[in-house]
Length: 177
Image (cartoon, rainbow, N blue to C red):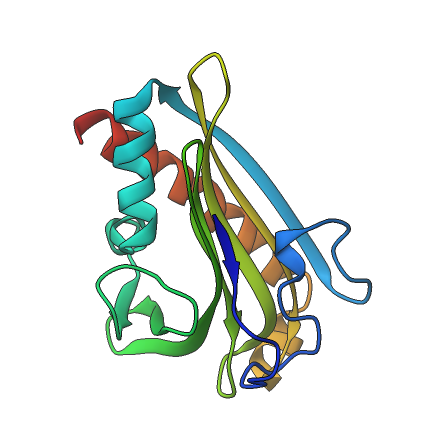
């Protein structure tokens, strides 16, 4: 069941709350869509789904994650530390929707005030009827800080690189999980 948090709680810093749950993504943003094959079978699906919804996939990909819950749920908050050593930027987000379904597990979070970007990103693990397991990252974003505006087209490239890295690490986590 996919749960979308009530739109009455306007804490995110962009107007298109929940847009990663459906297509098309809103105009006026950079769009990202990356899909990676993780493997095959229920065990891979469940291990990958757990790694995504507990932020283990983010942590093993080099992010510092502080979350107010062990597993994602609509309305929970998370701060993702981006960068190296003391040069980290905190990126606060709120979980907008979750999916805990027989063949689909994941969530989307939206940016909060203080995040260097403005937008939403979803992380979904799904299993095809033939048992093939996929990881998909979908996002829309635009700069929200002087340094992300200054970086211009480098930011979408970095976002795609991170989505690929996340998929690579998730494939390893799911294979050993």
